[in-house]
Length: 244
Image (cartoon, rainbow, N blue to C red; front, side):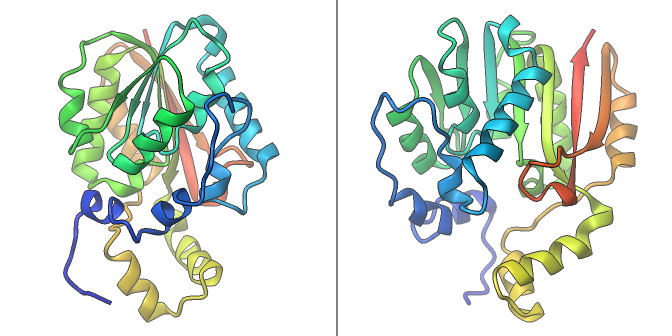
């Protein structure tokens, strides 16, 4: 394995990345709006699980009562696809992987697509209190810790009502998670270390996220374990932030 370190943006956009190889296998029609696409990337997840996750997110952010949503790190556009049945919702997708954005454009309507080189820097361009609800699902593990805190600040500034951050990798479960990855992909410890040092997976404790949020004004928040049907739910937790 090439031992030259690469940052996440470069690595994730490579054509031989596993997610990108799977994307090549997808064939979608523009009117295919009632089925998720994420199960192609995570074949171990059933369509039922994916639908339950989408319904859970919708309840949390009160999807029926909002007019705009931002999905920060939107991946294949899974939740935005779920939102598509509501024509009144303005959808904004921020995703650094240009192949994911290209895929989203085939299946999503009435959506603003943003493919920045740096998602954190782009947040500065978005007007304060301009979006009703923000979703950030399974993103923080790919950011440096100091950048993660800046992202939270940016999301709080932009949101009018709700911010839902899912699948923050739990520091207490780090060893458990590593063992599970080795088993899942049939890796020995040496190969695992070589592979995942490229990804620089970040883990957080509930305490450090809570400490950071307690210093913020005009918000309330709740930290709890991932919902049980979320992928790798045993290894992470989530944060629901409400603007006052």
